[in-house]
Image 1 (spheres, rainbow, N blue to C red):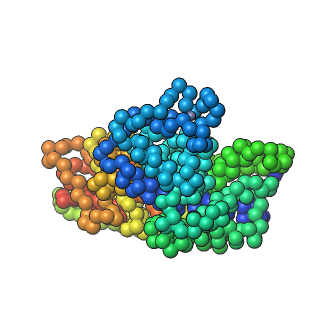
Image 2: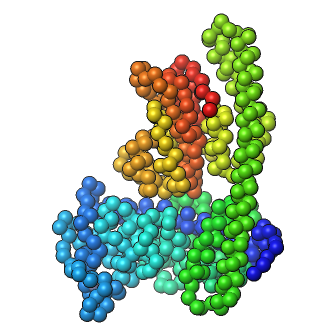
Image 3: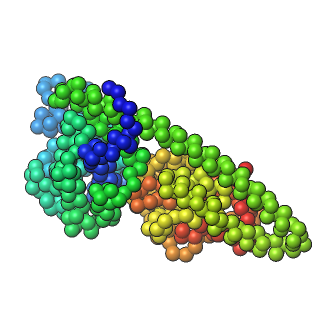
Length: 496
Ligand SMILES: [Zn+2]
Ligand SMILES: [Zn+2]
């Protein structure tokens, strides 16, 4: 099917735009829900499996007795138990845990096929998978990878959530099932269109899930999610390109799995249309990236020249006065910081694409490490290293699903072990004072500084990647992620 319209034009059609808004609304809903679901299960899991104890010896088939009443074992030669028979957990942990999972399952039929009992003690989401729909979720390992349908299913199927959302006790028609059904209806619609009436009802349904008083109180993301949904519904939220892509990918995947319940021709048309939109977006993103690259390089050259000119000035004016020179350089940095042009470019880029901030940080480190909106709400992490460890690869593309571990750190499940090896420390919002990193005065090498923050959607952004610093035995990082002058007043070495 041919379409000459640009995708933005297509989304200007009201019903198409409504479709997009609901799709993105479901993504926002999922993000508002997943950390709460995971944290709640985590707390419960730690009661079942005392911290420090551990078993990874039991496969699910070894742990679940072969019994046709468990919704998975069928016939005389049960497929699930092929060659495996039940035996008690050698560490005396998993049997009680299995029973507790059954007890907490609203319909007493955990999805044993989804979940791998060997990982129960080490990964809470593996336990959550017992509460997911029976098919299609066996490969996922984190809440990030789980779609809204899956996350809401945990709410609906696991009795633990009734204490926060009492409405879940109403069988078949409650705040949870209503949100789950939006996704189903959206996917089964033969066109990518949503009427105004449906839009209004579905946004009401999404908000209702968070506006249950006890849920609102217990889920730290709830209010923010409601605010985002309000903005989205009233066209006051800039929809990110990545969210459009996520919405489309989500729908394409589920449409491709749909059975013949839909007219195949209409279905193919829909999928074609979405692929087409995706390609356009990818093309546009590539062009956008190129424009930004060109812009950044131009600015870099300009600023370097400016720095050279100013340095010449310093040398002429105060060659003999080391102290004054340092002072002078500080003044220059201060002068450059509010440079209108730089800020304009920066603001434009920031408005268009948040993560691209990081691209600018090697131009003017001191200036750019301070751009954290609402900084005290964010969790800021920092570390220094002496070898320029490539930390970027470690945390790349990770959406930090923050949760507590011993010692009060927060971390992302995807990077937990390597992350702690990397030695990041939380700077804010938990800590009040400026945080010094001190190291031995015998260190003569440059120090590299890494700082990132986690925003309210649990996304991380680099503020400072491998920023180089002349040795000064201490580095201070402020609550806003700003790297401050250390005791002796050092300067950043320019990038490149
Ligand atoms: Zn069996
Ligand atoms: Zn075991």
